[in-house]
Length: 266
Image (cartoon, rainbow, N blue to C red; front, side, top):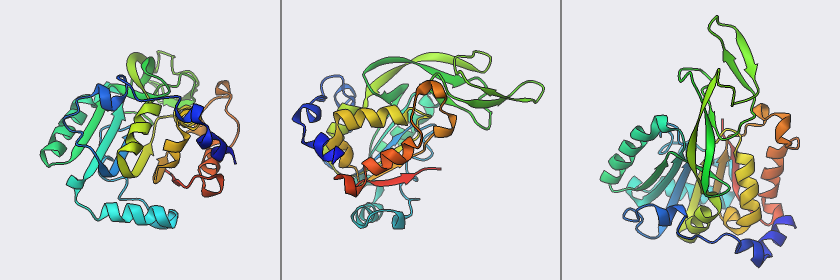
């Protein structure tokens, strides 16, 4: 089995070890009080409106029995007993997210929302492409420079843009990136039930591949993984095989020595 081989490899499992640059080490530890019975992670927070709700909206019938029981138990517990983590690279939401974190901490919840930072495949900095028209119905912000995006010009005519570095529609900024490997490694070491939502505008393919190669055991420890796939806007320049979303779901299924409750987010 593919994942069985990966998980058995001490070289791969130990390839990325949380050090001083991992999120839980780099950020203030005052709100990190140790063990989490239920941890909820929102990668691609936007304005933070989904942080407390997305995991409550999951149809438990779509999950394997064990994962459904775990999530049901978490849903029945009070907010203060949970740990919440989130990442958002778009500075448009930074002030709002910091205020949300303070409010939730004031209620006793353990919350860490990392702003101006994208969860990615390595620590460092990347160009981040942000649509100029914040009122666009398809408002986009992404690390991926080659996506297909529809936009309307000043005369109301629709066009398809295939390069996010086209400054007619997008501007780019430099944002920090955090390696997903050490973050997930520490997360599973300190949590029982873990539910993750990933909505990162095409970068989900790179992040999941990175986790399969560097932290397969941690990835397989997730109880629930909810992903919004963006295959329809990925261009040929990304060289992604067809039906890659389905392939990831198959790799993380029970028959491949993994048992993640996998749900597509809309």
